[in-house]
Length: 226
Length: 293
Image (tube, rainbow over the protein chains, first blue to last red):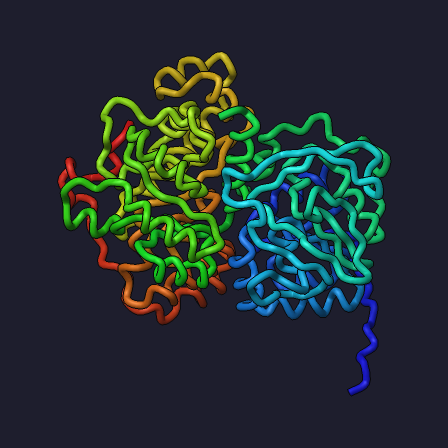
């Protein structure tokens, strides 16, 4: 069989957030703060023309199951071939990894090895701070909630942040992964970085890495149903 | 619990949004729940319907059973402690589970005091019938709230009542001038600072799940459309004819709660739901929602 030449479909200047389960509102809020158009993505149609897609934090077994039931996993694979960029946060990292320790992989889109619950139970969840030179010159806050660990990256994958014995952020040309949650902190730098990766220019392209008005309850801002 | 730890605990609940947390009584059920797409399991000895039927004193489960479940699944594991029983909570914290439910489904150990949850690093979820009760639990350190509903009945009416009550009180707070908040907080037993916070946010400052009586995909979607952040299903799954199928269906209906075609699809051919109980047929002293205050 001859290789299929991917057609780079025209894409809307918008970022989608996979809305099956997890921290969707938190990502929407961060993108809104940057002036980037964003939408919740629940169906194949909504998914088929976004410039980038965020796989949010949540429970990867739940999200993987729903992706498979509704065939969205195949649509994601197709759209990545056609030029869509992808960012997996926490559970999203598990979903896109090529290798999972002790279990079969899901989307297998980036050559990394991931260990689920790499740190332990909720009592081992923690907050830290580190600089990611490629993303922001200033140190940024990192929140790890029952986080996975990236233990190894293959060729073609660049390590963005290594802490002790594990990798916390990495990327390939199409895929960005972070095992921590920038959307749970005032940090806008990763969202700005991902927008750039998608070819989008945020209206607030040169703002600070941290949103000074952010509070721990900021996620509730738009969380009510209409 | 310092402020940072509390924030992390609220944030774990945030990551459970849009998901279903299922009651399980053994490893086999826990695996069925995980396989179906549950975002967490609640380990307990007997589901509420059995506790209701058997009577007697219901306590924290055997930690060995909870440890086995923790071993068997990768999703978060929750377990119940009796209202006010801070030593059961200490044991569950030492066991390093992910969340404690200080639950009216178990027989209360203290009729005056709930657990001082600020003394723990582990997160707590607590039940509430109205906004005042929710805010009192948050003041004590709860990082997540759920409706009490009426557990073990397969009857969603009480969960609806509790959610509508909370929504109404939040709307009232949001609409009133700030000088009226003091009186409203006093009349409804709300800590003033938290009432003010709810007024600003126009919702609870922590995640609020529905619990107590949810038995069908339609019940789950109903509670989600009423504004809950996610769903607890107790007896509804493992007291039904085909637990695995029903568990998957409730997960689907919760994710697509706003899409009637998908909820319809999820509702087909599930076999018998758990037997239901009319609330009026339950004597007042056997109603679980009245436990705690």
